[in-house]
Image (cartoon, rainbow, N blue to C red; front, side, top):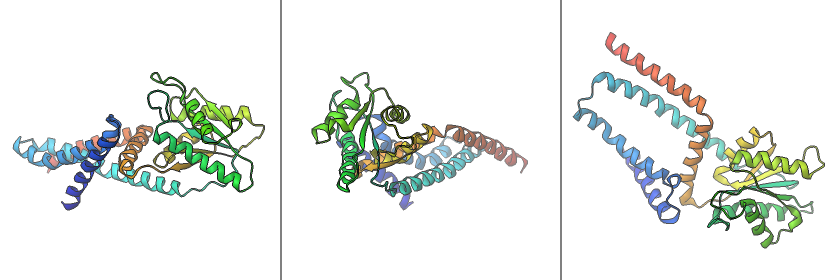
Length: 277
C-alpha cells in the first residue's frame, strides 16, 4: 500500500512540474494520466462491490487485468534495461558522419532547448574528435518542414551549428523527413551520395531517452549507426521515458495484439472453469 500511494503521488507531482515548465500537450501529460489511473484502480474493487458486478464479469476483467499487469511491467523492465545498457555505449572518435535528429522548432523557425541539446552533443563529439588529431566528421542535420514551420528543421539546426563555430562545409542537411525512421532513411541517402567510402562510420545524436528507439529505427533503415545521447532535464525524464515506452509498444503492436488475444482466451477459460466448479 505504501508503494502504491508513493507511486501515484510521485506521478502527480511530476505531472505538476511538467505542466509548469513545458507545453500543455497530451504527450507531456502522460504522468498525470498514469497517476489518475492508479487512483482509479484503487477504487475499482469498491465500485464493483457497490454496483454488484456479476461474478463472471469480475473474473473476466480480473483475468485480463492480471495478464496485462504481468506483461506490461515485464516489457517495461526489458525496455528500461535495454535503454540503460545502450546509454553506456561510447562510440570511438573516428566517425565520418554524425546524424543529428530533429524534434521541432519554436515559432516555426527557432531551435528550442531540447533540439539545441542534440546539436550541442554532436558538436561536443565533433570537437573532441578533432582535438584527438583525427579528421572532422560531417554533421548531417535531419528534419523536414512541418506545416506550421517557416523553414525545414534541418536548416535551422545547421544555422545554429554554424553560429556556434562549425564550418559550413562540414554540414549537410536532410530536408524531407517527418519522423525518426525517415530521418535515418533519408540521411543514409545523403551520406551515400556524399562519400566514396563503402562503409562510412556513422553515429547519430539525439536525447538520452530517445537513443534506444532511434537505434531500432536505424536498424530498420539498414543503417549501421550507434547513438549518443544529450542529457535531459530530470523532471522531464519520467514523462519522456514513458512516451518512448508507449512508442515502442506501438512498434511491437503485433506482439501486443497476441497478448491481448491470449488474455481474452484465458479470461474465457477462467469463467468456464468457475462454472465447472
